[in-house]
Image (cartoon, rainbow, N blue to C red; front, side):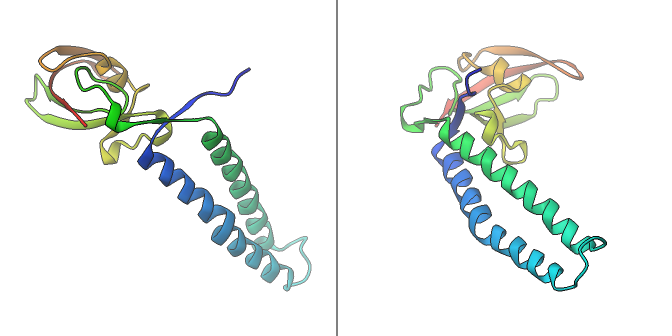
Amino acid sequence: MGKKEVLLTYEGLKKLEEELEYLKGEKRQEIADRIKQALAFGDISENSEYDEAKTEQAQVEAQIIKLENMLKNATIIDEEEVDTEVVNLGTKVKILEIKSKEEYDYQIVGSAEADPTSNRISNESPVGSALLGHKAGETVEIEVPGGKIKYKVLEIYK
């Protein structure tokens, strides 16, 4: 089975690289220091500090492997070359929820860097995938867990 392509903006790539650097450097050292300190307490068979540090070490190592694989399979979305005629990966889109008249601004990104709290939604999410390929002025009906919602695409930009 082939590796899944990871779609990233330059910003997303930089963020993953920074996280990887932190985990490999500062975080690994912090855990090693905690393990060393816990070993100084003596008997490790009933040493919760040691057990917790070893568990965290395993989690950090797993996260490092995950990030390295994501970066190895990354395809960078060049936001300068993104076509703004239609909603696409890398574009920003302003939409209007027809019923509530509320406007939302989103950037469509790959699932690896989706962060709804920062208005960055995945191209694989219900809203993100439904918006793909639509032009400004078009109305899109989106099936979401709570039913159907209609949005009007107001603007597509970089």
